[in-house]
Image (cartoon, rainbow, N blue to C red):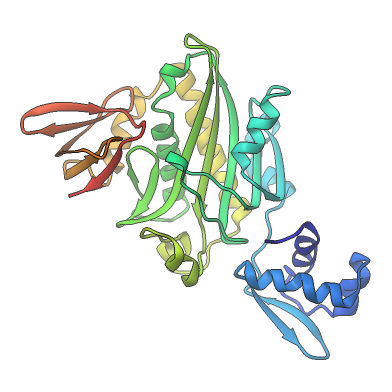
Length: 326
């Protein structure tokens, strides 16, 4: 696991130039031996660190680190309304916002982490992030609507992300009900929305997003499902993550504003057009392990999945069910 001091050294090395051990030590107020020890964390984080005897250290293919000022600049007109914090390392950006919500209003607050140590996906799954190769962030949003009216929020955010990625030149991004972004059969991103509040409103949503930007092959092999990244989809290096993050956030803000007024219904057609399993045979795995087979009809205005099973229309809310291709 990277330490805060280790991050400080890596930020110094993120320019891709050679830095001597003496200079790194002097700039951080530590010994050269400690520098060497800390930079071993770079190898564990999947970064390519070159050690040049007599010269120093250099990060190969050094990823530009996330930078709050750069994100705000790229957000343009969206920036004044948002409070943005960028952290080197957190357990989870959504967990951080949840802690803040216990002490104050987190409406339009966004937390971005360069690396998460305990990122969370749907149904308690872990989310794997890579230093310099992922985007992990969460946004707090207050709604006058009750939580029951926000069940389709993950689908709405999925439309926003897909639109932003398409506009950035990443073709073939599809959505998988209820909260995945996929390319082909491989996952490229995920959405986790956590809701709290009164049944009739107001409600608070914490919208968490994880996106694979550039995953090393070794990391991909260690994940228990097919995954891909934007570098693979785009056929080359991804442009600045700060700019990409700003585009994603701007699209999400637009969708959340619209959802507050009109709900999911106006986005339903856009979502179904991107659904990878639309009109295809699927299997629904129920919480008790049972299964239901059918053909996907689409989603309703509340975001529930509708399938045709032997002539019967069945409706499923996300909950603990799992959707799979037959």
